[in-house]
Length: 288
Image 1 (cartoon, helix red, strand yellow):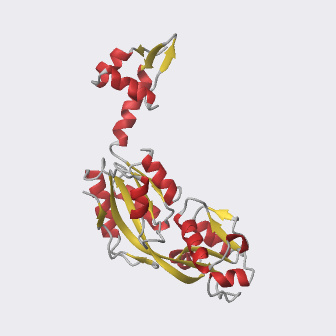
Image 2 (image 1 turned 120 degrees about the vertical axis):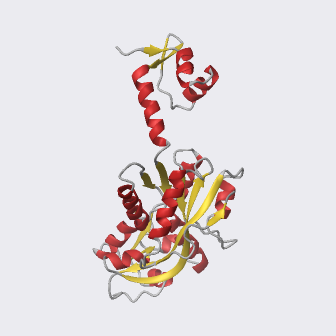
Image 3 (image 1 turned 45 degrees about the vertical axis):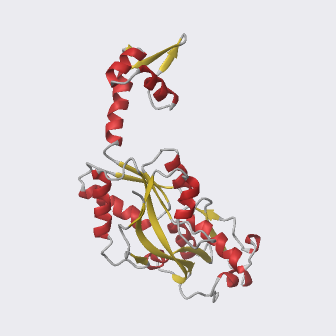
């Protein structure tokens, strides 16, 4: 049976006061058990927890909007760093990324949310999600969003109104994604009720899935980034250029791992990628 430490012994080991130990218990991070009303801490699990915290300070955990270029670059970054520093990414949608950042589950998130009232990307949403601040916004790139269609555009679709008029089978994106947010805004501007879009409730969670459904003939059209039309291939009708930003917690801003990652992304942004513009890559849009 492994050794069990008392609260006082853990406080001495971590060089904290006992109140802070109880706070770590409440936050759910510190391995512990409660026996007959007394808090005890398995030593081996506690040491493993400490080791994981050291790794947390070395790697970057990111979440947010699905972007195939970002995933590709983060993979290259890990190889460049010989796995000493990794940047993990969870594609959970722009709003999902903001939620994860607000819950301190990640160091940063990527988003492309357009505010219809101001015409600005991301910043109006951030001021509502994080009214007390505590974040830095850096531009990664711009990318073109539009309609992905089968090669040759057999239905002759020219815009969203044609999607409804011609009864085209639409493949939609998941809720909390910036692309879904954009679609609903565009439909409202066009005066198109969502229920008139055939397949509005047929949902996938990535740009690749949208493109594949169209490419395989399982859908006629979907909203996605131009980059996917060059990968499969598909036809593409541009609708809007959007700004894709990285939002970082102030706690990690200025650290070597963030500077190194941003430097890598900025240098990688010098390449030409269809559907992307890197004119402001690395530019700080909000922060200290």
